[in-house]
Amino acid sequence: MAIEIRPATVFEDVRTMVGPKRANATACWCLTYRLGSKENAALRGPARGERVASIMEQDPVGVLAYDGDEVVGWAAVARRSETSFARSRSIPKVDELDVWSVWCIRVRPGYRGRGISYSLLAGAVEYARSQGAPAIEGYPLDNRGEKIDTTMAYVGTRALFEKTGFHKAADTTSVLCGFPRVLMRHDLE
Image (tube, rainbow, N blue to C red):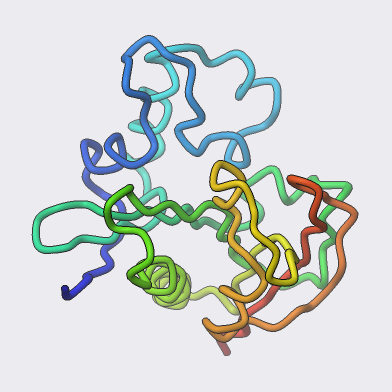
């Protein structure tokens, strides 16, 4: 299996990875960290997908993993200044660099356990680098090898980030699924 990572520019492929199964469902669409809390809470049903489409008119909303023509994975990546992490009280700002953030990594069932998460994270790093980012951050769980609920695994684990060239830059006060989140960073300059 040769996995190819591409910028997320095809709406239907993004929908496959982060859209709901029912058109009127209010699913994440990976907007929780991309939008302010008021706008995020106000968007319901199809309006969430429409908002993703409007963002995609300006820039890709992340990167997608493909096995041939089949989309098999997703990673959300954008400038931190364009996300709610820019205003977070629980995830610190390390310095004044215009860093990018990667906050969601998903692999479709049937493709998990094949290393696609590593490819997605490496692809997010390369995409941020291609856009001139001086560094990229992630905020994964520090689960110390303990099993985590797969619905909460979307932020990744410290081990995943370390194996992809990131280093711990700071502790956070954020906790997800009972595990602390750490600020991991990959310098690109």
